[in-house]
Length: 210
Image 1 (cartoon, helix red, strand yellow):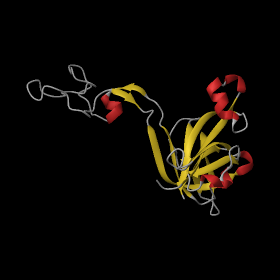
Image 2 (cartoon, rainbow, N blue to C red; image 1 turned 120 degrees about the horizontal axis):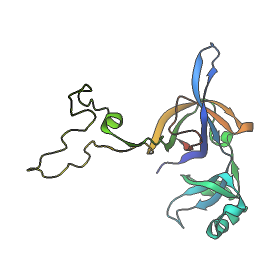
Image 3 (cartoon, rainbow, N blue to C red; image 1 turned 180 degrees about the vertical axis):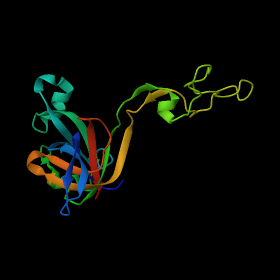
């Protein structure tokens, strides 16, 4: 697996900035880092090279005993979110070290961002898949139903993957090739051109292939 540079963040919302020509650029505002290195993993011990990082500090009173024991090695601070990123040389990092935005990204970089999309709950086929439905006027007995889902004689079952009502959204999505417009390291804020998956305060994995 290729070496990956990454950091954790959360989506704060969207706004616009202006370039040198006065054109408006839509950007997503992300609070990214600082992240603390909790553990180093090596080929010799775990079978792969990676670092484990934590994001968003958690009160000590909210930690259970296994969590407290794990976090003790990196300074005792607990975190709500933990993520591993593959690295070429884990020995280049130290447990307890903090990673900030400028340690990972620069303005103009192209990055990928993963997050869970907004959950829409249980939806019918018209909203979920864009079915046209039936007539909306009086006399129609077919308005928003999915219609036939298969024959009774053969194959006597519903094919896997059939588009039917069900839970919509809340799935992992990766938005690729997003451009870093600005980095405000003092505020741990990253401005990325365009939209990213998820709702406000949603967790984001921000990374680029090194």
